[in-house]
Image 1 (cartoon, helix red, strand yellow):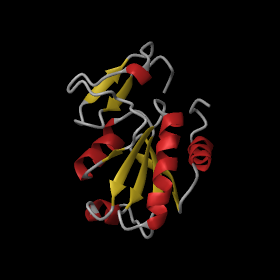
Image 2 (spheres, one colour):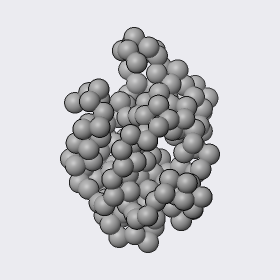
Image 3 (spheres, one colour):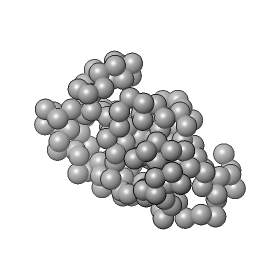
Length: 151
């Protein structure tokens, strides 16, 4: 995908698909459907439908953190994941999936332990890793698997 192509960005709030022209500053962009900022630096917690929409409809790479409220390492990693979102957006979308609430999605993804992060690009899984990480480790992991993501 060249730098001249517009990007398709799925809104984290309403699921609307937005077209962003290359000249547009994605960091300032708002959803054409609901008006919410497309990139808030705060990973949205998604349901099954929103997860599928983010992975399948967005032209951006998507990182999903599969977690659960009872998981200590998941809770410890949450601030690091948010810090990583601040560094990686608007080049990469970071979302969270509560495996307790979305057991069918977790099963479909073959989740064996949490926290697990999966990187998708073009609707396909590119990489996955399990275990809590620091913000720097998350950013490095994403960039190691997506050489085109700006530093």
